[in-house]
Image 1 (cartoon, rainbow, N blue to C red):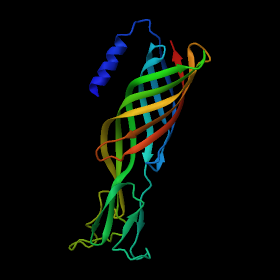
Image 2: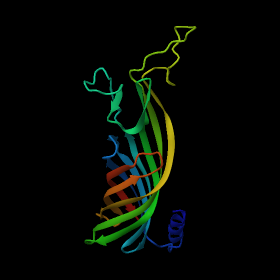
Image 3: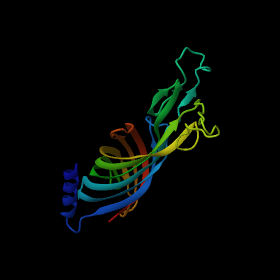
Image 4: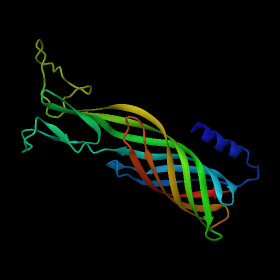
Length: 236
């Protein structure tokens, strides 16, 4: 992957000084079937026209905040079913552990992915002012995560000496839930897109693109993000 980025950089630097290029920015309207709640994001694109039908493109993208709905706590007494102890249903990206018939959920509560990409854009001219294209890029991305620990139904255990002190509080100082800072995750994945570029003027273009990426990393939810981005480009 590192060699791929070096190769693209060498190609860009070797382009003639008079080569045309572009710079643009826009908003991405995101959705995900893998994550319960997905915010919109922003992206900045810039590149060079290698040939009439091929662009070398870089992008900086912010996918926006993502979050999971918190699991539903079900008490063994209220479930109406024959279950062994309390439990949680509708888990996000996390796991359950049991101690003394009390259940604890630990998992990722939210995440925020950002990245930098380099790739190629293949264009096809429909007429003098409209182009259709397909893009394939490598995205180096990073995501900051926030973790959550839920333990509803846990009963307080008091100190034997000082009976006003509860000894089994979580890190947030209560018995039920605690939100803590999670890990920062880094990875590289392919990012694909296709769309059109309309140029009402020689130097001004309107760009629209559908894109898709699956973020894959160790101890990280395999999250597929889809985006419909629109923006303005300046061509020179």
